[in-house]
Amino acid sequence: MSRANTAPATTLIHTKFSPPRLTRVPVHRIQAMQQLGAGLERAFTLIKAPAGFGKTTLLTSWRESLLAEGRRVAWLTLDQDDNDDIRFVEYLAGTLAKTLADSAPEFGQLSKLVSARVQLTSIINLLDHFGEDLTLILDDYDKITAPEVHHLLGFVLKHIPPNLHIVAACRADPPLELACLRARPAGGSAHRHDALPLRRHPGLLRRHHAGQTVERRSARHP
Image (cartoon, rainbow, N blue to C red; front, side, top):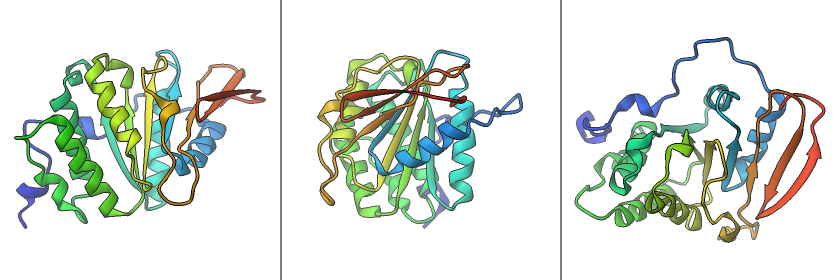
């Protein structure tokens, strides 16, 4: 099979499939890294903090640690232009095609002549068939304001395969129906999400489990 059939479409900006280059020495947030790792068994992790608090830096460091462990990690940096349902789904397919090209080339063959919901359904089915654990990082999700795109991500979370874990970084709570995450088909454990609000100083670390908020004091920087 030719490489052209498995690579992301040339109309997509391929640099969105990798973290930006770090311009400063990263601050190692050991506690936050550990909590991100613990959240891999859940469907969705939300990292929430204002601009400049190091969300992208944290996710870049965590991605490197996952790759060093041999894990599959797909990255997508979002911007205002992604407030279009077809474009959003095409970028999802693009980062998955890049990440899984060696073992699941069918992600690079998804048809664009269908609706966003139909294409997204194909992605969900392919991920479920793929079977191997995969982490999908959505950086700058706060750039998404279109209700139709929020609905598409909600559709993925509602039907998420047990081998997929999604991490989104944003400045405020996105309008996603996280409390409606259904139970996993196997194992009986409920889909849950963690919210990790980063702070420059020790403060409250809020953890959300299935729509319920628990607050505890953090004795060190997250």
